[in-house]
Each structure stands twice: as structure tokens, then as C-alpha cells.
Length: 150
Image (cartoon, rainbow, N blue to C red; front, top):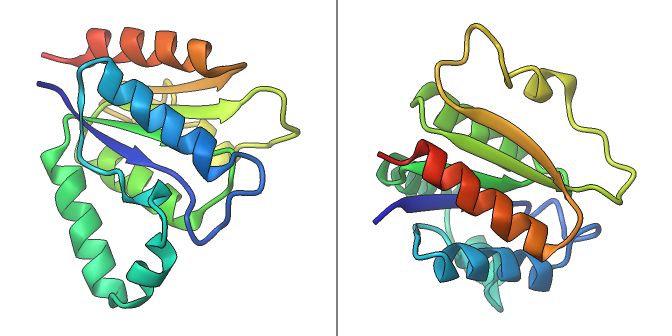
């Protein structure tokens, strides 16, 4: 079974994509038959539980999930420096990465992050995808995982 690390904004907020919408993306990943190594971002009361952990505990927990995962899927419409760090960690571990963002938002992705797609220095599959709706997300996730799972 393919293990998927799902990353999205938490402390950065849910202004452009709600927790409910992000939870539906997590549902799609599981409905497609993949195992989520992360689901905590959209759980009720998550910020209170996270506040009880040290920065190191959060980092080490998330890094362990990254190492255990086969593929990373990130929703980045809500900007987050933590999500950017997770993307960098997965890149260095040479794990395939799919970056999703909403097409209808006036959103600008970092040039540095966008440059990872097709870079001669990135030795893994790295794709960006602007989606219109959840059916679009489902189709793209299925296609990406099938192409990148062994």
C-alpha cells in the first residue's frame, strides 16, 4: 500500500482553503486506497494539542512521517513556511512530490519552489497542479501516485 504524507498550512491559517476542504482532500487520498501518514491538520482541537508539544517534538514527529511515506502531497494555497520545510525535506529524501493549489485564487507560488519542477538538481518527480474542484484533485492524485509508485 502506498503511504502518502499530506502537508498543508496549520499555524498559517485556513483563509483560502478551509479545514473542511483540506479534510476532503485527505478523504480522497484514503478513498483511492492509499494510506495517509498524516491526518492531524484538520482534526478538531488540533491547535490546542499542538501547543502542548515542543518545536522539536513537532519537527521529529513530522520528519518521521516524511521518512515513512512513499509520496508527498501538499496543498499550498494557504501559505505556510512549515509546509515549505516539509517539501524541502521530502525533496532531499528524493520522494515524489505533488503540489496542489486552487486555480481560482489570486495566489502566487514562490519562484524558488516553482523552479524545483524540471530542475536539473531535483532528482525526484516534482509536480505542481492548479485544481478547479475536488474531482479534479482526485483525478490528479490518482494519476500522480500511479505514475510514481513502485
